[in-house]
Amino acid sequence: MTQTRDAATVLAAPQRGRFWRTHSDPYREACDLWPAGNASAPLLTAAQEIALARRLERGDASARDRLVHSNIRLVSSIARRYLGRGLPYEDMMQEGVVGLLRAIDKFDYLRGCRFSTYATHWIRQAITRAIANQSRSIRLPAHVVDTLGRMNKAREALAQQLGRTPTESEIGAALGLPEVRVRQLLRWSAIPVSLDAPNGLAQDRRSALGDSIEDTVEESPITLAFRAVTGNKVLLALDGLLPRERDVLRLRFGIDDGIPRTLQETGRALGITRERVRQIEAESLTKLRSLCHGMVTDTETDRVS
Image 1 (cartoon, rainbow, N blue to C red):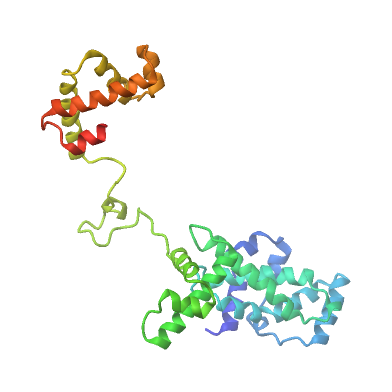
Image 2 (tube, rainbow, N blue to C red):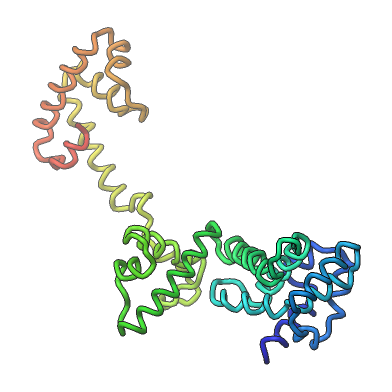
């Protein structure tokens, strides 16, 4: 299928894209009536563009249609530059038409600029913003998406030229960017993968990718069991301390209720000073290590202290 016929097919599909949701029914009907031949309408000369702009100032709707029909190929050409960026060609075409219509509304022929040159900016802006907003589950600013596109092109060109994957410094030299920035862009270019996606490496094809990822937050049953046994041994060792020493450690480490107290809170509860609490705590921990006699490993006692 040719490029112009692709564009005509897109314009005949009013059920898809933001374009059809943001324009009135009369204009949608006009879009439906565009035949395939209009997608290959002849290009306008500068004089014709000025004449159509003047007619548009007088409220001639047919002048707007003529400007749109004659610039559909421009929209298609710009949209094809952004293929592979995560947004289907049909959606980019419709977003590009939105930019084209905006250019028609803002075009000032008195400035002496060709309409196609002026419209290119608005078409490209509409497409790149749509890519930034719709193509990724994590939204990136439009200027970052544009930089990612330039980086991908440079990386592909360098790979063909060098016959290998280019390094970050080589990509940065080609783009005039520091290596740190290239490394950041490479991280952003990674496509997010859902944890609910099927795990292709698992024998059970029904398992999700998230099922094979270790939970580093929740402790394993073995760790929990070891911690329980160790805690019981520490509690047994506490019985060998003086009552005041046991009270200080229970309050400081929240042994009974899981709420550790500060030196000041512990001293207030026991009627002693902060400094005295510190001294008793240091002496008690030293005794506790001696009383354990190997029941608790050095690692675990260091963790308690």
